[in-house]
Each structure stands twice: as C-alpha cells, then as structure tokens.
Amino acid sequence: MLAENPKIHDIRPNVDAISSIVLKVGGFAYPHYFASLFGMSRVVGISRQIVYERLEARGGKGTPIVCPKYLYAGDETVSG
Image (cartoon, rainbow, N blue to C red; front, side, top):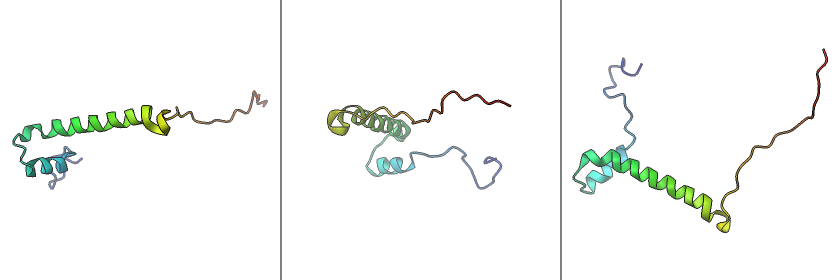
C-alpha cells in the first residue's frame, strides 16, 4: 500500500536517521557503517538494562520474576 503512494520514494523506515546525522556532523568518515553502529548501540543499551535488572536493582537483589495473579474459583460443574 505504501509503495502505491507517489509521495513515498523509500518504503523502508529510517530508524537511525538521528544517529546518522550525529555521526556525520561528528566527522565519522564511513557512512556505510551507520546502521551497524546504530544496531551495536542498541545491543549495548539493552544489555546494560538486563545487567541492571538482574544484578543491581533493589540493592543487589535484582528484580523479582513477575507472575500474573489469577483467581481460582474451584471445581464448579455446570449442569444444564
């Protein structure tokens, strides 16, 4: 559907547009590495979040495993 719109030239989203601008302004001379650097920065950020949640949160206890609560009404048979 997006390809049929004459105003859209490239239907792939440019998720790293801002980081590419920062790298270009900063003088990084290899634009074909922009997407790779963006992906690596995401991996580092997610890894840091996992380390924090597992080792440092709540004074070193880590975050608890979240289990959804449910209500059990017992064995009720429906007669009909």
